[in-house]
Length: 75
Image (cartoon, rainbow, N blue to C red):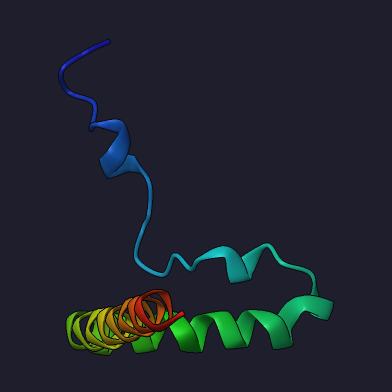
C-alpha cells in the first residue's frame, strides 16, 4: 500500500448518511417514524428524562417496599 493514497475512511462519502430508515421497506415507514421521534426525544431530553424516570422509579420501589413492610408487620 502506498503512502500517497487516502485512508479508507477518507475515501467514503459520509455527508448525507442516514440510519436504518434507508434500508427498511415502505411498509415499516410509520413504525420507523415513531422510533425516530423517540430517538429525537432522547437526544434532546436524555439526561433530564433519565433523572426524572430514576426518581419516579425509586419512589415507586420505596413505596412498594414500605407497603410490603406494613403488610408484613400488621399481618
